[in-house]
Length: 447
Image 1 (cartoon, rainbow, N blue to C red):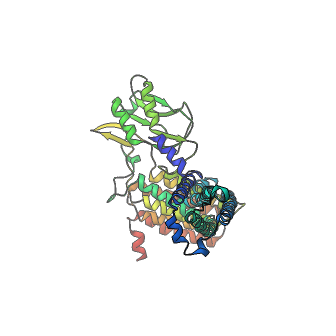
Image 2: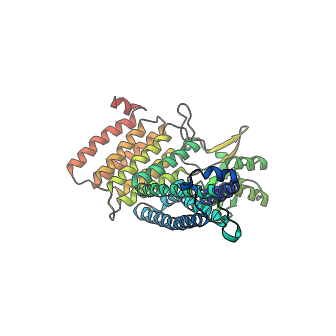
Image 3: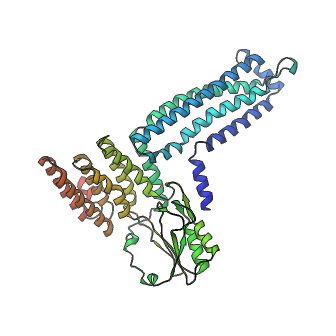
């Protein structure tokens, strides 16, 4: 199942899959319209000779012009796409290129132009004149004319789309939206507060006393996805416990530990193959089950913005804003336990993200690059205050307080202006009070 999922993910994010489907549809449409041409349709179309009265030479010339111009437009579209990819990679982060390649707009525009070219070629091939016996599929020719007009509008729209898509706000919003969708899948919303993150569960001492057998990875790459049902099925069929040694988003090297089984004897080849099948490994990370990768992309943009060569504080502040929106989605929700039980028996021990780990992923490196930057530190404190008002779980509030104290230490060490230090101290007081108070305190203060 994981191999099928990986293949489908790769095809959806490629620049050839959707355009190929559209080209195939265009070919089918051309054949259908050619076959639909009849004497009845010709009589009906002859009522408007100025629109449909072109002969074989005129129809052939028009379709040849449209086909040639569409190929030129396809080249221009590819050039614009490559320029946008180069600008996004150099200005923001190479990790955002996946979002551009997976854009349905870009794929659709390429498919439309290539489809119009294919349509015109097929219709052009059926036009006959002279000794061959004259045949002009007027309906198909007129539809080709309409497709050409539509292609002009699509080109204008694509130019607007490229100009807006390379803006920092558009890139960050797209990454944040995809990350929020991933959050909703892996952390489903539940009513009320849970008992806490799974890192606070009591440790099972009996598991340490078991004889763990390592299952090595069969290939090198990033873990894109894990089939939790498959892990449970392997554990149930072998009457054992499966323990993940690498989590989603981590890099695993071939023949190193991927997972472990609580067995007395080494696992047989069938068990190893079944366990490997539950892990989807590829050359790059995706956000299908990896919310931390979305956070990583936004953090990379912030780090590039805070680098001395760019020094774009506004973009860094926007990154903090979107990171706070992502963490705010998780703050009131319960993180699933890292242990899976079946009929009271422990079956699977997983490795997954927690609120604290995602909080560190979001703010640690940005904080390290925000030395002396009052705007970024102030916005990070605002984000922590907002998050504190959304959760009452002790471990999460403790993680928020730690972030506050680290920012306080950074501000005291790097802010040279007494005025800036006084502003930060005032804000620190408010945020510390919010992390000590209960959820909803921030909203009550605003009211």
